[in-house]
Length: 193
Image 1 (cartoon, rainbow, N blue to C red):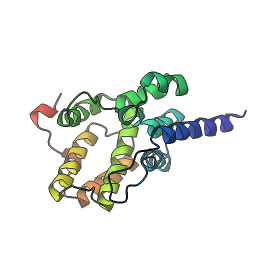
Image 2 (cartoon, rainbow, N blue to C red; image 1 turned 120 degrees about the vertical axis):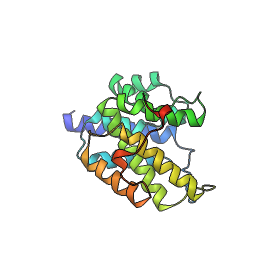
Image 3 (cartoon, rainbow, N blue to C red; image 1 turned 60 degrees about the vertical axis):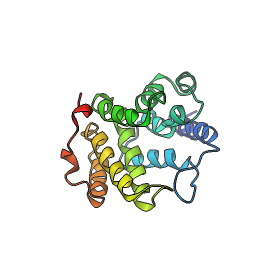
Image 4 (cartoon, rainbow, N blue to C red; image 1 turned 180 degrees about the vertical axis):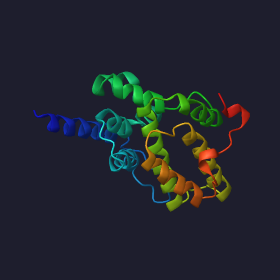
């Protein structure tokens, strides 16, 4: 098998794995979009931004499998290798923590993440923010929506410096949605490490 074929096969394998794991999940938008659209969209953002690292693309496709399905990190490593496992691990929230603490941990962890994990995090946030611009999830108020944009800017603050194209797109989205000067968003004391 040629190198190009094996690269394509490994990416399709990750997409198939994620599709099986997320098969019964829907996004929170009013349309109930199939969840698999999200990880594929995150990978697409990265490829459009010039990222061709197979581990990063696989990590993007698999980034929510451990957090949102019964998938284990050991399963990810067995199927896709340690490098992909490490990316998925770095971008997965600890579901044993309450929601507010998970959000705070994302802010604290972002500056210490690997470059590969930061790329996935940037694209993940961009996808979610563009989706939030497109439609408001059921039950969300405008205040909650703004809070999500501000929180996302705080997470992205710790991921800056890895891909200017994605960061510029994020800044445009932030500014359109009320986050002024997202490169200098202020962190609360408990959000600093």
